[in-house]
Image (cartoon, rainbow, N blue to C red; front, side):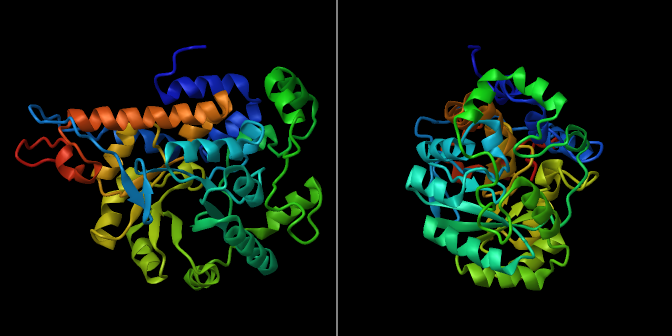
Length: 386
């Protein structure tokens, strides 16, 4: 086993251990991948301000997210098909988040159901919802979420139509995979993954199959899903869903100051600045580039989180210094899951925690709550970057 020191180590293991179509599903951007790459590249342009001769013995990353105490301001983002990266993947990721003291967000498009997560962890978790046309299914899944102990709804706004992801189309990606000759050959090259999948019954979308009217097979599911993303979505519909839920809501997929101001009017409790990891609109700005203007638009006190591009604790700290109250990580923990299951997710979170702690110390800061614009370098020595 190689020494794991960074998320990139987990990514390489993930790529070796999971069939190509499911690795590509995670590590892909829309069209040319320009926004996908910018999400990482733009972080590199932000520099820390190193400070010395400061007592840094009593450091703490403890914070809150949506009023919930967390060991560090990091949450696991909703990622579809985790159960195709590792058998019962959502359960393993939820347990790792629980052990680390950070929130786990279950995707609507998960292999494990809401009920599976509730039974496996016995702990509160968050749930991501797409805006769907089927009102009966919507009412039903919100009620199931309440019974399962979901404490916050993460409502995704940027997938009313799916961006073109060339690799997914070329791989003919489905869950479970269609047994074509090419897929069978690739699966045979990953025997550990294949044996694990044979040992679980959770190989389709557990929140949908058997719960949506007329969806009892893969063919039914693919047809139902293609018709469900609601292209009529507007702010009135967002407000309607928030009222239906009746609890805390994070609006995910906002990447523009005007939309951010309108989002506050819906009564949502927080915004997640996100471009879906560069998987939707290629050519859009990175989230870290968009963040400062959105922070100015919503004011200093409104809860603002960021995802897309966070693959280290240093990037998490840069986002916080630029105005985020916390971050969500997606690919970073999914690489760990595909590489080593629950232990891999735990490793990813430990890497991010260690990065944050050491970097905060070298910037001369003891408390994550004090990590702000003054911790970033500016070419004007008397004026740290904002």
